[in-house]
Length: 514
Image (cartoon, one colour):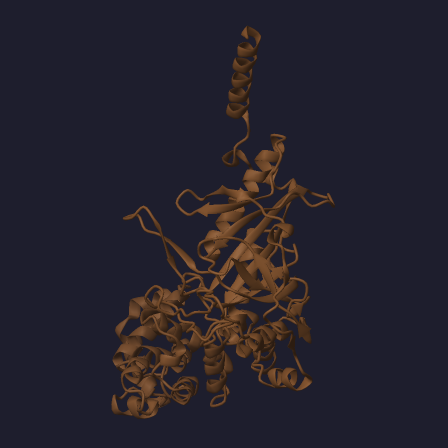
């Protein structure tokens, strides 16, 4: 007994010593982190914008009062039978086509068995052996160590359809967990990537591109804050140059790109600390604490066998005919990467501009509508990325609610580009008037307010002579080498002309006179 007690005391002391001297995540330096390679794979769950649920006619609507969008099938009452939502299948195929996937022409649904209170049936209808889409991928752009933009293809293993579970609500005012089944049965596509991602930055770019893609396709709003887009992140580490993958850890239900990147950054350091301390990394499911910026253990990761998949006997196989597939292909919109290429090649704008203007399908369409009415493509790009974007940000709106029509903006751009009005008058004076009265003609606004630019050389020469005569000391300083004073002279001439003078012509006249 005495020896047993001594051994226990020694073991506790040794464990305390090792814990106190072990590396912690905060101790991990960039140099140590650089000795390891991070391997990341994602499971992205995206709710589809169908009017009804995947296998029931209950409404698919976010924000309704709890347990109002439910019926006998959602609640799994005895005698109910599921029926597939054709529109959800079409949306999944549309996504697969956009990602270059092969489309399964005959697909089935399976039962994934697990027992949570928010899962009324005791199983989830999903797809296991034969998903609707296989392979494919998306291209992301990130900066390399030299700061140059590089492209990389992130492959998909597959994309499958499944129904969402309900929602557990943990209300601090009561001791029970409340259940809202409105979300139960909502159609989801789950996109399972290959482990091709190597950093938090690449992962953020990947999810950003997926969110942009589903919005372009109009199959989801991609709203991560509302849970329309959620990610499970699988992270493992291995020594640089090693071929064998490390033990993966899943970080569950990430609902913001920023927090997902924070979670990956912490998990990298946590796993490096464990590997350096010669500790075993356990395959588990972890959660991310936003406040502390750390992940914490939730449960040991289930294996596929735990789910006991088998084909759902109540659902017939879905057969995708040539006619159906071709009709979906014909209805596909231009995709972001296609528009980026078009904007740089056809309109000659820089790649950066093209990336900004294709961020949403609506902005891209508005830009093209403006370019159909003017040849000043770069100026149109500058206006959309400058004054228009500022207005939208200030008013928390999107381009669909922007008051000025593409034709009106094109007319204002041409007015400025042809030097009929100065750029400052166009942006600071005519643009605000046009926002308030979008039906008016920009040239009429300029004329009625005496904002038409004066390009009469004789009149401007008179003003230039007056300014030069009134500032002899500044003229002398300019002629001795202080060329920066030219701006002062231009400003004085502009004041005398009530800002109607052509500043380019004024600058030329002043340079010649001086």
